[in-house]
Image 1 (cartoon, rainbow, N blue to C red):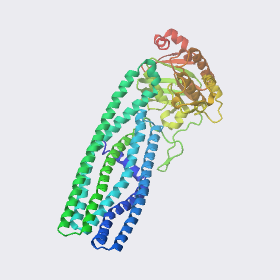
Image 2 (cartoon, helix red, strand yellow):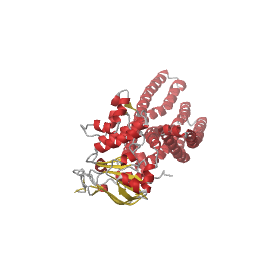
Image 3 (cartoon, helix red, strand yellow):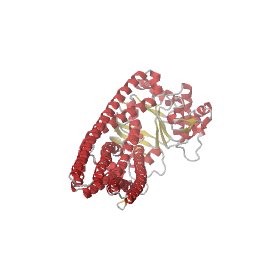
Image 4 (cartoon, rainbow, N blue to C red):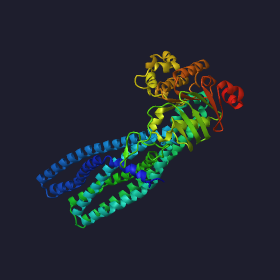
Length: 577
């Protein structure tokens, strides 16, 4: 269990500390409300003594007027205190969501490793909400403690025995409530993990719905989700049972405690130690204490859930970066010394892989000259994946290096390195907006994107849409066909005009004629710029200056496409089957 994890505590109390002023103001208003609530029984008792016992009508009206004024005050203080507490809760949750999104989108990556997008979304919503709710719980907790304290003082003024009973019994109830919250905390964390997993799988299935329908895999996908959802339901029910059990036991203990207070008060009244009005006040205060003590039970549950969610948030925020960020290139000064790393003034585009080992790659050596168009064919798709991750700085190699114009890529800032080497993978997503917005997303200011659209055949896509390039595109481009999405993504990559462009299977979803046209368009648009085509497509490989074959994680052959098809069986198998 990660309850004792320091980062989890830091997240929890950091969220509270960020709303310290709101929590203090809310707690002060809550204290005013609970003080008024606790004084109500005392005022009723005084009114009874003056009006009923003494027969003083004027005194009765006076105390009733004071009682009315107290009600107005406690009503206003509750309203404003609850509003401040709720705002603090929502604001803390908002700040946590912002921090989580910032960490997930951070250039160094690592936060999304091993986590589905839906899981991260659940953490950024439900977990952030639960941690934010702790601020509200503290406001109500402080207010409830004030109510108990004022009640104890009032009871002490009535009877030392009653006052001490409340002062000593309340901490005992709080301690028991804390112990009873332990199972809830454990089960709450499991509940959130299972719920996040179910959300992640659901989002994953929705994203791949077309593929699932295309291969007739809907039944197995539904069965898989049903199992995961059932696990989530089981965990939720266990957490609900733990919360119900905790609330039930705490309510039982609270009721027994209040019954004891009322019993002691009754015996004192029977012996004549306290008067009628004081007895009414004591019984009313005992009934009032139900509220604060029930609040303590709720606060314990909120803290238990908040601790569990804080540990999950801490795991994401504290995730190890996938790559080192590299030295600063903005003139940052640390300990009096400039830490700026190398800066690429002008990128020629010379790419060199020196003894590169990562994943399935084994000591890979490859030199690509500036302005050269090189095709990379892999007999194992894992080789392509590993190569793309290293070139895009999504990971650091286990050994060796990637050099750009003689500079090790790991010594450059992430933003600078990725701006110089743009890796466009074949499954790149589009975003919500217009088709034109997607194409120009990474284009330099004033760039002519018509050439990129023509080279990728995106101009044909625009002509087929009702509003042309201004046609709205839904999230992830689901309103477009697979081939249309792929062409728009390719146009976006070409329009960026990066010094080094790495394209991974950019034309797998288009017909042969369009693929041939796209191959020629890439060659024309990228003339004079370094381009790497990681593909097994003969049409694309035919327009390259040369092709290298990766087999077993190493370069086993190099040459032009036609000669390799004729001379190399492994190459022929990779590109023609």
